[in-house]
Image (cartoon, rainbow, N blue to C red; front, side, top):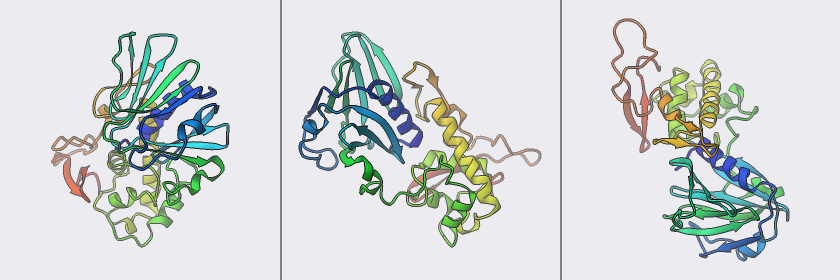
Length: 297
């Protein structure tokens, strides 16, 4: 499942090719993805101008001139593929492998391309081999009332997510802080990798109970979360393989991981004697957690 920075990067790539354009033709090739698609989707998209984009947690919202927003969820295998109509450029916006471009008129057609949007300059396809993604139409004025978005917590990069808000949300919670932060009702869009990295920066063990975080620990954790997310978005995401952004620059945020995937390696922040015994990997709620027991308490 792509994490917040990957979804943000895909959305920015889509905005670069679609914002301000009119959808001259839309094609829907099947009636459903993970859930049924809205009736008449192709007709409702055709002729609409793309006014802009918004991300909410791991969902993208493409706002249209008719007063609707196209909600897009990539799921586990979804990606967007943009082909320039007047040049050989192809841009593949892939949250698990970055945004790469390929040039050449002989670029092979995409398999499992279920939805196509065409503008004067671009042809954009939604490709999803496993069909775990989703699309829906929602009135733009009622975006936050959509069933996927209604119960989400605050955005971690917004000003409203601060130490006081986090402290209030965690008060009395007797679950490990790692599990609490992955609860989308508490804070929207945080994923496994970034929670591990933020807890390391804040020097907090993933095993610590959430109810012990309010106060000084929350004051360390909130800026750590914001910094990790902001740095990853700037680098183009945290794909576990080489990441090439839509602007052609290579992003390697995964090379900056301080704990994730570094089991048994020494922690860079453990000074002095005795030497660091290495980063440990444990499983919490079916997800891997990486941390340094000496550095994180």
